[in-house]
Length: 251
Image (cartoon, rainbow, N blue to C red; front, side):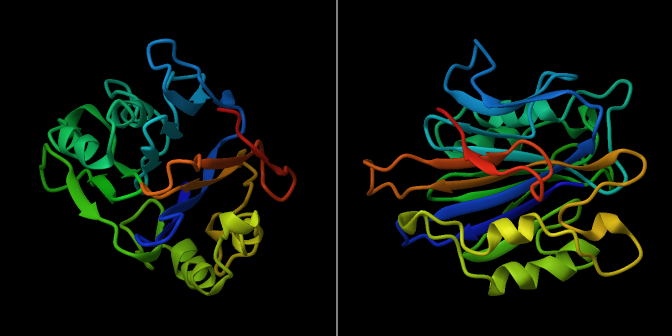
């Protein structure tokens, strides 16, 4: 189960900031964010070497996208396409609203259930395939202003123990301030290994005896349309964030 923290401030210099922890099997091979796709030279993203897709990416036009599994749907399934392809499909578009419009017509029967976060410096959405009710098209939810959290359930769903514990902490933490060169209280929370309940997977950053756990972490900030002189910021921790520092991603 991955986690994405979202801060939307439409009138700010940095209207969209996200923090994201990727949770995956430790033996699943991957490469850090880079321009790994010759047919998509405008995309910077981590590469899932097993399936060829990605879990989080950003294009040169300023669209960011991330994929998360829904509850109980970890890993591939015979006859289903890789959900990591959907991030790349979202990043084929120059703005988030166009990407969501295109993906809203997706035939969900080809994929295991997912939450797909798509945003730019104006809009933010979650495209959801719940895997229930016989629907063949995904649902779309708009992400409003403020701090939000997305995991394997719906946006801000406190039925998820991780969201119930950490969403209030992120909302009360010092917010990232890219102009001052810092990420506020977010790095400490993304690296946190505390949990409330019986399962360590309720922590933001964990590793289970099975080898499933937090494999990397990211911090991304997108500048406002009115500030074309500013470039997006992306810092990446190439491993569990309590052990690996966040370093700038080269464009």
